[in-house]
Amino acid sequence: MISALRRIALATTRFADATCGTIRLKLFKIGAQVRISVRRIKFSMASAFPYTDVYRTAWAALAGPAL
Image (cartoon, rainbow, N blue to C red; front, side, top):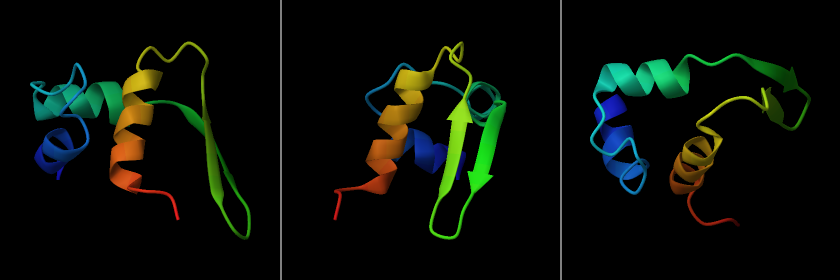
C-alpha cells in the first residue's frame, strides 16, 4: 500500500525515493483534530506540520479530478 502511494501520489515530491518507514513516520503518524459530521470528515493539522505541501500534493493526486 505504501509503495503504491509512493509510486502514484508522491512521485513529484521529496518523498519519491523515501523508504516505506520514512513515509509512515513523516506522513501517517501525525497529530490532527478530526471532526466528523453527517456528510464529511474534516481534519485539521497543526500549523507547525512541516510536510503540509507534500500532504496536499499526495491528497490531490489520490483524489483525482474534482467532480
